Length: 217
Image (cartoon, rainbow, N blue to C red; front, side, top):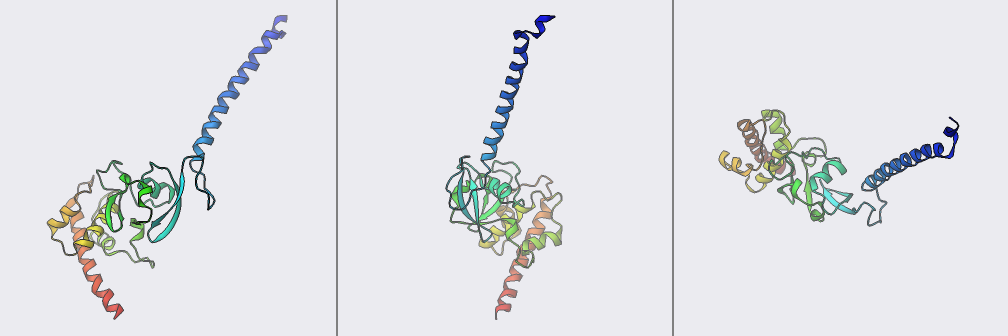
């Protein structure tokens, strides 16, 4: 019993505490390193310790300053750093089209576009289609009127693909429009209703042009 108070007995608690402190230190260190990638830089600083670079993007007509990694995809930047969650991440490998945005008015899968490559270009997301007064874009209004989607997870991608296609094909046939947005997939598979809504959107856009011209005259 007296040996319990000896030097050997006192070594075990100290070693246990040392190991515990070491483990806690490793955990805390990992948390600091992980958080470093999301530090907000003050204007004028070029890099952060997380390997990110502060850049300016033109998103929905507004300059947005954001830190991005070299390998970071545009969909991630839009959703998780700029808060534009209308851009959905589905397959995350350029197959479903849920992440479609317009880059210089051309539909692109944002999950497969490096954010660094769109500097100096115009990026439009679903949030940027409506007018400043809240008036929906003609294609958005068509979706509301035709109730073209079920779960609507893929909706923003279809709308963006349609808006981009109609910029170069304003008077499409149903077959042409179906082909033009065929890169987008719907897991509910209600393609007829979606196409009905998109064709109505095309008609709405054609009707909106004369109305705008009349308002200017």
